[in-house]
Length: 256
Image 1 (spheres, rainbow, N blue to C red):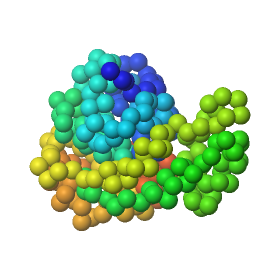
Image 2: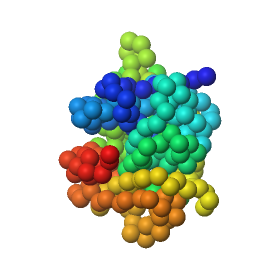
Image 3: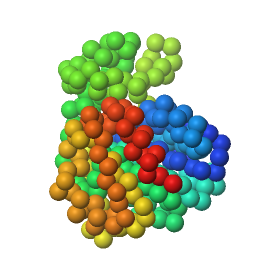
């Protein structure tokens, strides 16, 4: 059985599982993980399948990724944990809590709701899929190639964290772009109407983001009756990076 790759910081029996967003990796959360480890957590920065250093697979949906989580916890002999997920990772976290509620102590969801979202990554995916590493030999040349598809500097910098040296002068992508370019619709899928989790849930939303709007609160309550919603000012969808002080403060004033 295949196991997810992780970076673990801290060595206590107070486990925090962190799930990154689409096209990200666990290592993106290393700065926050060091902070939480100093607070007494054992932090597991997970690479979800087809991302980071985890295994590649043509199978890719939230139920399967929730099962990956269970396999990981079983492998690490973790009975119960706190789970934090951002964006796609938030959808995985929600699905995991619904499928395996007995394994979750508390749930933290960063700027994503249980509703469906339209696919909006295709231009980025097309850009990543177009990269020809037989010709692109430097990070600078990759940056130039991506500019035609992704004009935003910050987004390109985020995407280029997936670059690595396969061997000398040969670049590659950590992500399985051949699979991920086909899953745009699956990434946006919402929960089924009958799916619920009755445990304690914290939803965080960036006030400059439209991923969770005021009108979504009935949907939040339907699926997660024991939820709390906190706003992060001066932040959009990347709220943990855009306003880390407020993000960390909101979590630390809530969790137990």
